[in-house]
Length: 198
Image (tube, rainbow, N blue to C red; front, side, top):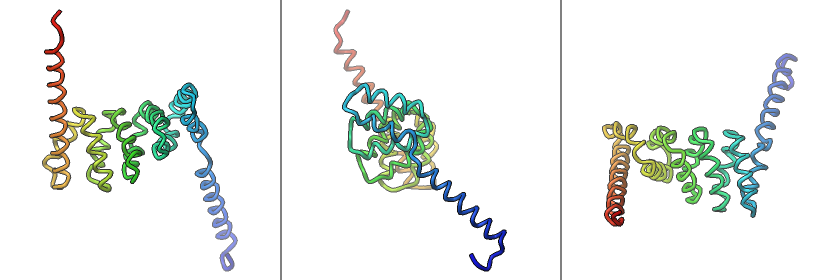
């Protein structure tokens, strides 16, 4: 740093030190990282305990929990989804971001979790519908269809969008929600008709 005045050199050195300290802070393990290992335990009580602790940590545990989905371990992923669902709204944006992954199992777990979270997921999902890769768009459509009726107030106004791809996606989602509701009603009517009279 020759040729610079002492104050400039001091400022640069200070900036570098602050940057290195910030980077070191980013690289430090989250308290959730150690606890997440408990989701892979053979013992269900250890898995439940880890899940409770991760829920108590809340939002700071979200990245570590989403990382479990890529492990391929269905049991650990189920516990992670349970924790994320309980954490709720703070999980939504990171879960939506994870939908762009090439890992179909990780995408499926993210969708299941967003559906579990329910209505707090709807508006961010609808916003995300017009962006991202095909994997992400398909996963978002699946989540909105599974969430169902709570998505309608956000989707119906988009039928008039100037984005034709978005219009097509919205029409497909609305039709699927309507079909799903119709099938549920028919199944309920069939079950009622088949029930023995008192």
